[in-house]
Length: 208
Length: 208
DNA sequence: ATTATCTATAGATCTATAGATAATGC
DNA sequence: ATTATCTATAGATCTATAGATAATGC
Image 1 (cartoon, chains in turn yellow, orange, green, purple):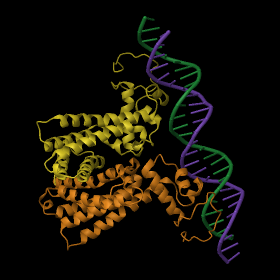
Image 2 (cartoon, protein in one colour; image 1 turned 30 degrees about the horizontal axis):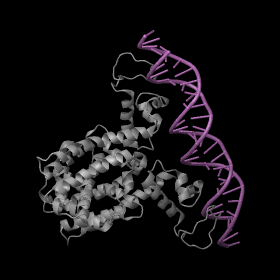
Image 3 (tube, chains in turn brown, cyan, orange, yellow; image 1 turned 180 degrees about the vertical axis):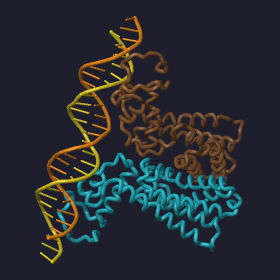
Image 4 (cartoon, chains in turn green, blue, cyan, brown; image 1 turned 90 degrees about the vertical axis):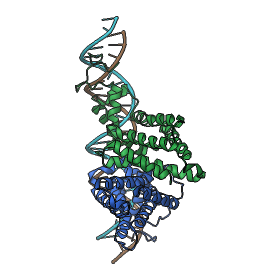
């Protein structure tokens, strides 16, 4: 499985460390997340990722094709849970749109700021705009559309023209993603409290 | 002057182009702004900056000590106008705090999104957090404090405890900076309209 | 003489491959 | 035999300096 801690096949690692319990590929992803979010993607070398994961630079290529694959995997893993949540809320007819929008905002902030290394910070990397990460962009566009649908379904949103609805959606989405910047400059703050306050603020923006 | 267009002292440039009317250092700053915001800081080579400015890679060192100096100069030039505006508004006793907060938000968004190449996007570069840019961080902290003071001076803000005021300030500041992300994903939008809508939204967040 | 630029390049990386090695599995 | 790792390195950069060159200024 890779996670078993018994004797392992293959030449031992040069720098032994206590078994992390993670499969080597997962160790690489964790290391990359930490380095990409703090130093940036371009500034992070394959050597830095590999050594932090406990192996030599060249050994990394046994598990991934290079840095790019690591970033693509991290991006998708970051946005997918939010989208899952959004789909469930869109399908839930029993609750008001206001209620579901609030819940989506809160969950999204929790996910963006919750992890050990500010994973949401990956969104901010300039390299992410490249077409190589089209998969991530598609998922993110679908998430934004879920926000739009929920805002349109609120009492205040129902009367908006399309351009006004788009503006409102952009402001709410901007608030949620702006949270990444706030979290970056003050990572100590209680996330769950902050997530609720942000959801409150989002509803105020959506429902003027 | 450097901006005169007559015959110039020194060896001619290898790749002649129509005179930009800018001094060489300014040409370098413009080139760096464009490349840093689109490709990122670490991914931008000194060669790319110099060639875009119309000179060879080595000639750049006649004007700047390296990439770092370019980023530091760009960052400060981006935040300084906002701070100037904030200081003026703080000193203006004739207007209500709500009015002045709205105006600060609107102006800030205009400045962040207004320039030709999304200069606000520089804030998002991971390298910016480094202590080498302490000057920028100090100016930004002062700007944030101006937001805090104006929020505290509003009718709704006057009754807040310190921690609640800080939270409110972070949300407003996060909304304003989140605007950079929105602008990045849709640079075509009318900036002045968007700036007013964002200022409206900020007041709603500040004054719940 | 002064200046702004150029060409050339040394030294320091960084990536990705080739081939060796040290475990376990059978 | 299979596997996971290692060491070594070729080739491709990228930065920053040294020294040459082609203008204007006096």
